[in-house]
Length: 325
Figure: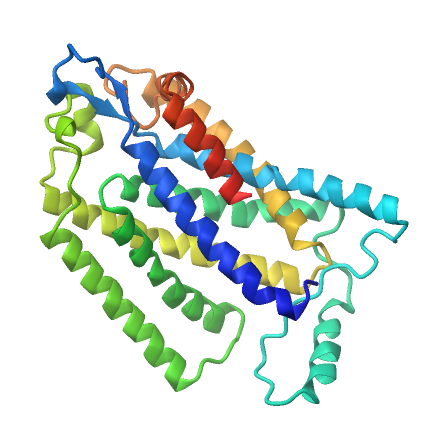
């Protein structure tokens, strides 16, 4: 387990990489990928619009955690220490008023792992469940980010704490105090204000994105800017249900396992990418390859071309993978 003194640093880095991930994803969405020449009609320029591919690249970044696992194993071998000598230890979530309670908290934490580990052997496939929740949540959020500003996207994700709190009480039998419930209500009201602001002052798109060609019209359905903002906020807020389910599942599994969290991320990357790739192939064959689905979310051939032939999109993809991992 990481030293308690490192926890503030880890939390700060989590926030920093999360912000970088959001800004880089929005940067991708603003890159012109078709009809971008100086002689082309500016009103027919199309921008990168592939939330499914963006979900796949997220899982590739998570799979990169296996590189860290390998490097850690080499380091342990070089130092001559026993690998995984202590295993995963959960951070104590109880409020302790003094230092004397620390040994008791440590004993309470150790009791979590007195039984057999759930995530052992073939049962590690249980991590496919939170990975599937991650697929649904991330894809919906990426689709919503296409319709709103990055700042509104980031603030709307605050609805996550409400669903995590509710699911923790219902499924994990946690107890929340009155001030915690009041805080959750305040967060919900804040998200509502953000959604209203997005509808009143919608995201300003680049000038040359006005009047996209007919093949791209399916991605916005001909909605007004205010309607697009509302739909985007609803997609992002609704995605937090899947993300909260993912968090609760992960907490349930980790409390009953000794697997390192970094391995959990790596396994979720493998399962998530496998399911996403399978879904991409099926959706491309049934929708993306048709005339109606051309240039849409599920046209994987076009999406791959846009990603590999556009330098800005390709570089930002690698940076997103690094920020995720």
